[in-house]
Length: 79
Image (cartoon, rainbow, N blue to C red; front, top):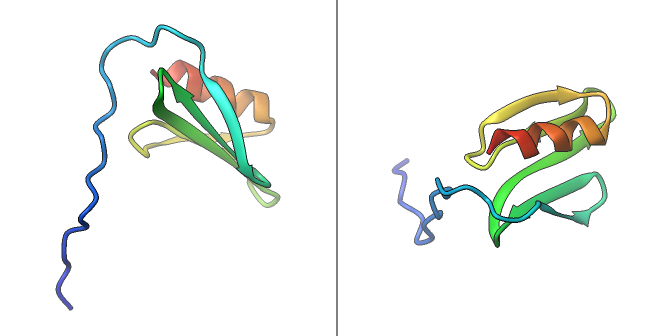
């Protein structure tokens, strides 16, 4: 099976410092997505087996956390 490139291109994460705090939204139950200055900043997801997982702006895993606040803090400090 041959892999074909997706017609969509992901925007590279910004290297400039963020000027505003992150905005958090929950598009569905157990999922929170952060944006800063209109750009994707990361997400956290809850799984009852492992707790809250945090993913940074480049989709790199940031870790597992006991609370939502801890997972959000990991994303906020990842910039």
